[in-house]
Image (cartoon, rainbow, N blue to C red; front, side):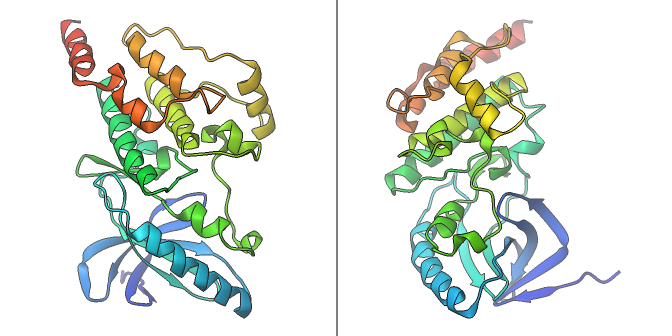
Length: 283
């Protein structure tokens, strides 16, 4: 069977090879016409806008891609290019061969979890230094390439929110289960909103469930407000780790850790990780 190819500017998209589906669109395997042997990831976002809106959006994307393309860090998926048509916006990024954290979250070890959180935090410290906030961090946006953790979808919220006809874009403004309370409530927020998201991911990787739930977003955030953070009994989870999670999941963002403080916390240092590994070996 001959594989279908779709030309997108200087890129080739494989419609039958879906890498994943997320809040902003569908991700396909692709390549550039000049280098067909190097895999790329191409995200297709439905925009369906008028000619006037297309011009406005083109200006926004042109300005925003300059900022996001400048991000250069081993823990951030590299944004290569964007291509825009009347109906779709295509985001071209580097390809990651290890899938996403969402597919692995039920079988990841404590040691691997600590390593993931450390790598995510390193990437976010760099992003924050460049005045970039993600706002949609979740397991499916944490990719793995040759064993290295890489944060994906930087720029998605920037592209969408900067456009005055954003209602035309088909997307969810973040995933409620990982969203910081201040973002959900429409209050002023800062880079610490991403710390909350990573705190939820941290908890979920360790205990295989999220700390709060609800039948809908309103119920979820009501429960977050009314129910104190609790940890399931797990003798393998060091108290230092739970202390760090508590500091990441402070409802008041003024009391919440930033990513620099997360990295400095004792739970993520080598001694703690060695202690956990040693305790596991003795069992």
